[in-house]
Image (cartoon, rainbow, N blue to C red; front, side, top):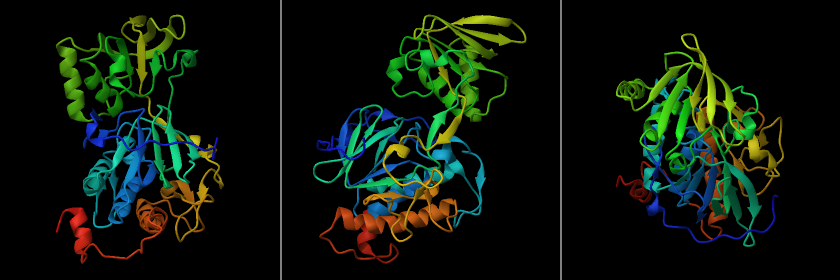
Length: 373
């Protein structure tokens, strides 16, 4: 799969982006299925991937980010958005979501491209020596440099323990929302009690024919304002809430026509539904990156400590995904790795240009790029 020739088209107009992703700080995600050309592809939009955009941007290197999650932030935004972090320089305490928001604000002058809700599935060498990354939704991004900043790997959904669920997947059962329009006019059941379940309950209710939220207890882990909005929708009949557990799927797979649930008050009963969205959390696996032809060390990617380049030239790995002697899995370590990686990436993207090291505090050129001059 790895280094077969591929072809790339010119970048499409990123100003046409209209797929806005829900989250505390909203960013535009490029339409799925497009073809793009850029300077650097970053796999992973967590804190280290986001900071890499900044370091690359200072060197005039344009970056596009690809992430399987529906918003930037990686683990910080998805698993512990409100959890305090104590070891970010200059912040005695900062939450995972606030750190994400600050990083997004910091990189906005460089206008990065975001490709969210998509998993990278293939990486090929092009005829002109660049890389072509393809996602599961058919998006193709070409660049001379690839940076893997995927944390511990790609996030994989935790599936409800229902017999035969795999036969319904991608037709009636989903673990993420890739395209909202796909759910227009459907009888939806959303299962879960976290931010993703509540966010998509609020976002999809106007599109759905009917929507039922199922959670095993009447206590939700989502943001309080989202819970309040959901309860208001339940009160006026726009959303149905069932405090129950999923028990089984009904219908001729892959077509779903009902979901068996059970509650203390009602016992076992059936919800009429043709679509189930299950948000039971995520686990991390190396995923398709393991098929990219890179040397691996205990499921991590070995790199040098000068450039953080992998065994394949022009492919770099930064953050928790990489390994080298003395490696510390800290966000601040990933920030350091991103800075050194960017210096090496410059020499690949601009082989004819001389790299001139500058400080943001004293360089009018860098300050102009940041919009602060």
